[in-house]
Image (cartoon, rainbow, N blue to C red):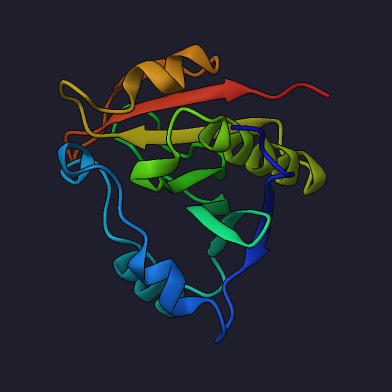
Length: 159
């Protein structure tokens, strides 16, 4: 398959149902929340959440939600600087392996840079078939477990 040109678009009244219908592979459901839940969280956190559809041509192929400059307080990092990064990433089951996830992460990281950030953060649930290897291949470093039992990773973005 040749990608037309993947792009990120805002979720609109015309695309919200397509977004909510997006499903990952059944074995991945334990690793990512449904898009409808992400959109509900974006609705109640409008100053934090940055939800976007991943589209290729007319097709909705995925969903990504980022956050920017959110303060994080971990026991081992009191007073840590605010963080930016990936909150959610879901690529439709039939669209995986085509570079859409890599594209979305890159686009989020470009937005972080545009806003003056130099570090991208992501968390993921551990487990076989989960996204850990994907994030590690993109250069994220595993930093440890959060209080929620997710791994925390980060990536230096540079200039």
